Length: 170
Image 1: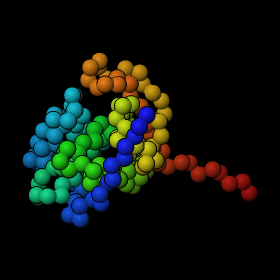
Image 2: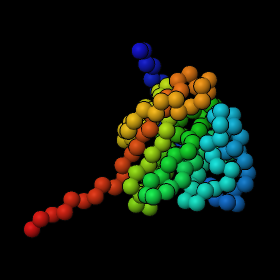
Image 3: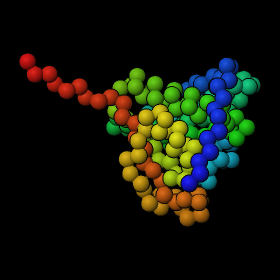
């Protein structure tokens, strides 16, 4: 298989990554539009879930949304529901910046891990997650409905955050 890697340019110096707040109705609406344009099914909840966190990235115009990462935490694990970057804003480090914000928050909250599912054929996303320390836990056959993506299987990927410290013996 021939793999072509496009260079990633440095993130824009004016890139702002922030957590979406309940009062950010305009940014939330822009996330929903981006979600609908890029995914065949909703990846961002209609309303924030308990333990849910969504980050937005913008670099050009105040209140613009170049990308978002939607997640929720349960039982010590943060699950990434969706990570999307507008096509015109790709290859500028925005997805990585969003992912790093999520990982930082999960570490601060002392969560055990971050988990996600990603299409087995989505090499750019798999490469991003792998470069940030995620590992494939398993392949989930037919995760996506037939015809949604060229490859219906998904990888379940996990990033362990805090490993228990082994007990020291005297």
